[in-house]
Length: 422
Image 1 (tube, rainbow, N blue to C red):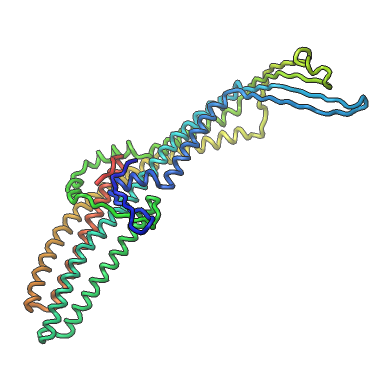
Image 2: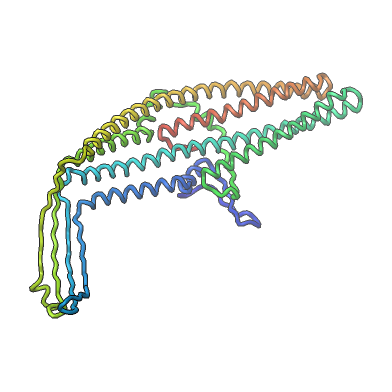
């Protein structure tokens, strides 16, 4: 799978470094994630089991050769036998066909189980990727706030020296500057932890370098137009592998009932063999002409009484079928509820994003105005820092709501089976 990411060999190190877009992360994970690779192997194993169940209808063919040294009252002599045997089940109450059907269903179901894992994997990548984006965007604002705090501290120091600022206000400015620096450290740690989580989802060595490529900032505008709740519900129910997996469980349980009932019926098998033998080596050359024996037979095995084991197995398999049907209904009901709730969360998240966007712009303008007033000594440091903290708080809310909306909106795309890109 081709990635658009740029792979760079870091200087003086053997570790590779990657620059990944969101699509690159998803493609890389679908190719490298260890758990997904394991599920693909399970698919292959189920395909082999399906093929084997079809081959079980073919006859068995075995050959045997023996040579013995014998000793009795007549003396010592050699003897030997050679034979070819074949057996084939002609009828077994449909057990062979039921086994083929069950293995086919399990093989097909495993592919949907892989898709189910892929959806969860993509959602996990979205969460980590967007968290890194949010951290890095927050860092840019925090760095500008630190620059403003540093400038305010310099202005405060000058005012303090000339006596126009009391010592307590000056110390508040120093404390605020230190706090703003610490906020940057905390955000960097959070970003690195989210980046590590992303590497784990990609099954990437944590020591490898990974830089994410920021998407176009217009993505929020693009995804703010989303389909109706009914359309999302219909598409999701048609695509989501959870429903298909539960339906396969019902089908498999139905076949298990038929397989259990098959034990009520007789088993008919066909057997044939060709063999020959010799005593000592005096007739070794003629054993195929004068000692050749052939056998063909049909065996019928009729179940008469099995201590009610067959009846019990049929009853238990019917109960398992009813449980699978109830689980299937519950799965559909839960999916409808989850999808409806997720859609409403998206609407709520979008409204919150718009509100926090307006609020952070307003607080930014207020903060900028207070900075000018503080520079000319018109307000106290306490007044300035109160507005600065209001701005920082509103900024955090804005960035959090922005990326929360993007995440929830993209999760809807995952539910509907849409390819995820930014």
